[in-house]
Amino acid sequence: MPTFLQVFDFYTNLNEFYGVLTEHCTQANCPAMAAGPSLNFMYTQPADRKQVSLAAPTYIDSVFALIQGLLDNEDMFPTHSGRDFLPTFPATVRHVYRQLLRVFAHLYWSHFEDVLHLRAEPHFNSLFAHFLAFGREYQLLDQKDLTADVAITALWEKWKAKGILVE
Ligand SMILES: [Zn+2]
Image 1 (tube, protein in one colour):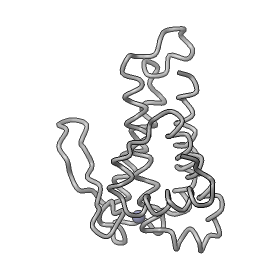
Image 2: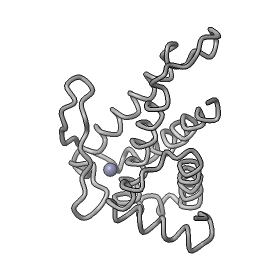
Image 3: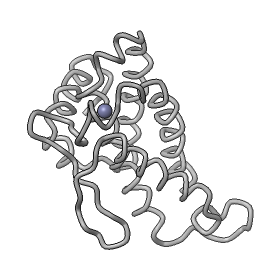
Image 4: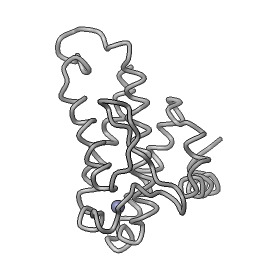
């Protein structure tokens, strides 16, 4: 279980990375959470499970706020109290992983030029490669998520060709 917690390190890194892209990822530039020519991720509202379309910065802020809330929640992370993890913890981690994958997908699809401009491509690619490898190792990666997404599938193939990802 504790290795599972590494998924939150990806959040920290991605959050930091997103910080330098926020001037490009605006309501005007990104009115939807786009990740492909006809792929816009819908946000599921926690309160009523309703799917809504959000501008990418709003979507990403909501994801990051959700994850930060989990990290701050002592019931979710009983690290200091000697209690057990909640039985729902694996499902929570899976959900977090999936949302982070969507953030990566949006950044690759809509902001790769910005990433290149910042000369941050090696760092970003390496973060994503680790993220994917981690997802595979802990079976957090839903193949459905990849095949539904043109941008990620192309990258996935690229990583495999480069030998970064091993089937
Ligand atoms: Zn954006």
